[in-house]
Every structure is written in C-alpha cells, then in structure tokens.
Image (tube, rainbow, N blue to C red; front, side, top):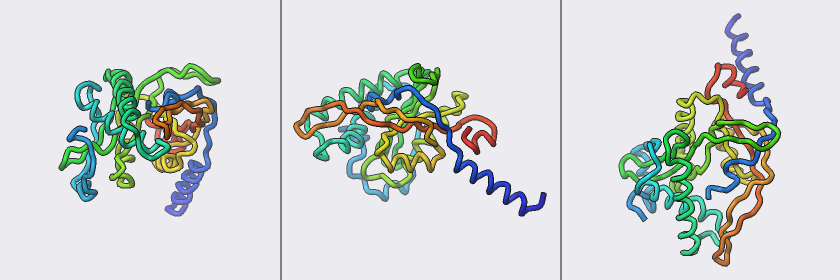
Length: 250
C-alpha cells in the first residue's frame, strides 16, 4: 500500500469516527442530584500566574481542610453562576457550602470508590479547578450497568477559564480511570450547557443517551433554593481498549 493509499485510509477512519453515533438509554445520572476563605482558593490571582504551570493531582482521601477549600472553590465557581441574580446570598452560600463539603466527603472520601482531582497553580498553590470521579452502579433504565466510572463536579475558576484548565482536569480523571482498568468513562451534562458540551466533544466524548428526569438545584432571587427538572446529555469516551476501539469510540 503506497503513502497516498495509507493517507486516504486514515482519513476515512477519522471521518467514520466523526459520523459514528452510539445510541442507547441510560438510567438517571448519579449527577441528577446536581453537584449539590482559604488562602489556597483562587480569588484575584493574575492570569499571568498560569504561565508558571498547573499541577493536576488526585487527593488520596477527601478529608481534612483541603476538602473545605475545594467545596468553597466549587460554590464560588459553579453555584454562583447558577444563581438567578448572578451572586449568592449569605444564606445560600452557607447552605451550599455545607452540602458541597458533605458531598465531596461522601463521594470521594475513600480511595477505592472515588477520587477528587484538584488543579493548582504551581507558583502560588491556588486552586483553579476541581473534578471528581467515582465508581457507581447504574441500575435503572433499559440498559442497567454496574461499576461504571462517572465524572462529575467539574468546575474551573472564573478568572482562569479558557486557559486549558478544564482539559487538564478531564485528562487527570481519565488517567485515574485508566488505572482502574475500566473501558469507559461516563458523564452527564445539562443539554443547555453548550460550552461544556463543546469541550467534552473536543476531548473525545460522544452522546450516548438522554436523561429527561435529572434534577438541579437553583439559587433563587428571593434567597431560597429550589430543585428543578433538567434534561442532561449522557456522554462517554472509550478509555481502555484497542487502537480501533478508541478511534471509533466503540
């Protein structure tokens, strides 16, 4: 086979990967209960500080003061964006911080079932991103599965977005799942979150189902919190397997 034939063959494979669609129904996501000031938390650090690089490392156990730091970061980076007024009241922030810290401890507190991945600035040590992954059973729906790795609770600091932090967090989670010898990594993302969906697609994730019964908390203008129904895309990526399995995400 000459070089031109090889190039044409590879181009055809890449085109097929792009067109490939994996469709099946999954049960409601683990994240249907939407993910629910310390000096280590990024506040007004200059963007040029990122030039020093970012460390992305998993926490061995989600205990201690770092969990509180991560929960505080998540509330300020994720939940404030969901507030109807664009910011949280003192009461909302206190409630969400308490819930988020408890969720991190419950879901990532043991190294066997889950990990919390933290991105920090190398030169300052500030937290600029977090993400979690855990092994969980998915038992509802038409295609029940057991022991499935699910990525959730991914957030990037407001002042360090569009700087590659999200991609580094995803890669960090994938490295963990690779070590677990799991074939697939799943995630759930609200269908209206176009920026996140674009990032996941860029990283090789493809839609494989919809969850129309997911729930998400919303901080209200009156200072309360409410749960609303949302539609989530179910996405997955082949992590372990042969070259062609990864190429076609099958």
